[in-house]
Image (cartoon, rainbow, N blue to C red):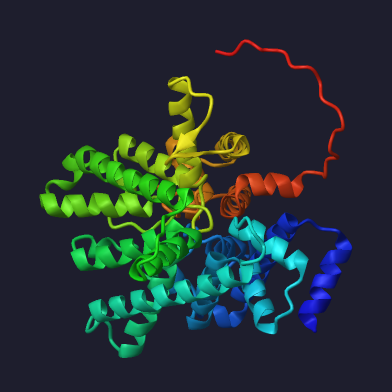
Length: 453
């Protein structure tokens, strides 16, 4: 009854589905900040300002990982569970949660289905329900496997079984949702040399960053292949997988050779490769770190910023402009250089509207980051590199920082909060949510060439 009244009230406001998604994230961030301000959420003697509570709630909901306070020393178990709930809701998307319970009640309206389509980047409405159920099953299955793996790894490391189990669940959810929030003071620096631990966390990050559409497509193809039926991966899936692999490998190799001098004394060649691999994976929206980011060379920071800007894949728990956007941009550039009239990939032709959307996302993202960086340069006392790194990290919902997050001014924190929200929802989605409805023109002007280049 409450849900029906809620959607009726929203319908009366005449809001677009995209606007409902934005407002849903704002609502859950506000609610999360309120819960974190409760006395039961904070440890005795710990003071938490409204802006810091809002920042923490936004970082958790937008699965970013930037923190102004230490989670384990600031918040009680209740406060940490609030943060964990925000991470899970933010990873799935609040409207996904509402849609799931709508399916259970078997009364999802057309408006709700439209919201689901925009949230999940899903083109058709008839299978939204099936997609939502798949998302929940995939999410909790992977998170449970991740928690069990971490529990087995941490057995004997903590004072009690309960603490081991709690740490395992928290970090499994945080890793799969690409949140980057950790209960350890120095993230995962104590486990930088553990191959098993690195493999568990990076696997969770990669699976969370691929996107539910990709994972379900892979599962579908495997089932058909096992049943001896013809099957092929979608173009979207192939593009995401190839782009992700290239980014991870290239990032790993560049970091391995650039940081050779910084890591050579403390790590073997195998360990350096593992550290480089972890940072290459985590920079694509997770935000955990196994080495001190402040000590990285400028070239490494630039590579990490590029990876953070690209981010994860559509329909995933991560942010950034997305791997498919970057992949289409590269394919389009190749087509332009070769003088091709059409954009072709995997023996398929991409529609022109896809290219328009790609460059719209890249252009809007670049402008947004530039404007926010200028504001931060005016409000914060930090170097240009540190501020730009922080801004791109927030936009990509990554959580890596050069150490300036706790020292941000109130204005700076508000800018980063807005950046995290924009990065999680998507820059183009945010623009469309703020834009007024435009009437379709019934006329066209004559074409005329403009000299370019």
